[in-house]
Image 1 (cartoon, helix red, strand yellow):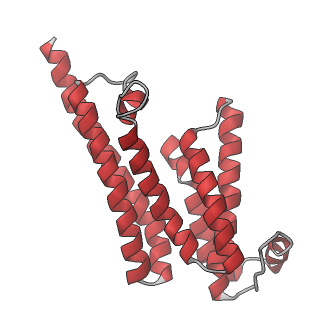
Image 2 (image 1 turned 30 degrees about the vertical axis):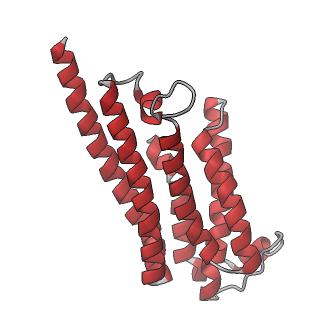
Image 3 (image 1 turned 90 degrees about the horizontal axis):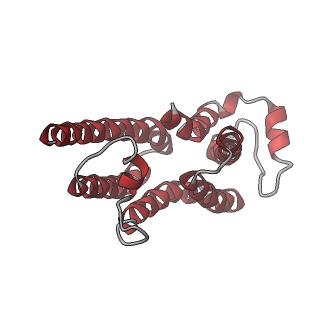
Length: 207
């Protein structure tokens, strides 16, 4: 459920982009009252601009709801919000979708750096171990392997984002941003869970 909540802003981005031409003119007029926003109802080229505004608002709401439920803000959500505000503002100011495209790659590469850097700071434990060790016990080398797999996954995802964005149509990229990223992430999470579970069971048997 939490993973689905993490993808809430991306779903909003996708829906606004797909149905921009059907949005009530009043919504466009309301959006045009905001700084940097200047949209024309029904203009296909403005769909990505409205979708960018939508994902910014959705991410702000995501952080607010998370805080109201858990009384704390999640670091990954905050990092995503900061980058989104930066690249989203540039997208709206210059009316150029390339900025929001690059945001996806930059945040994935930043996450790769965070996962890798976690092995060299503080307790010098992989970020994966810090996040999951209370629920699962596996040998230390396994945590490092899984952490490195996450690093590789984020790097590849960032590269794939650029390949799709600049090798295919804008609509194809929007589809990839939701279905491609979501599908690849779920497959990777399942594969990681099976890998960790296999080693957790082996550890228990050794005892």
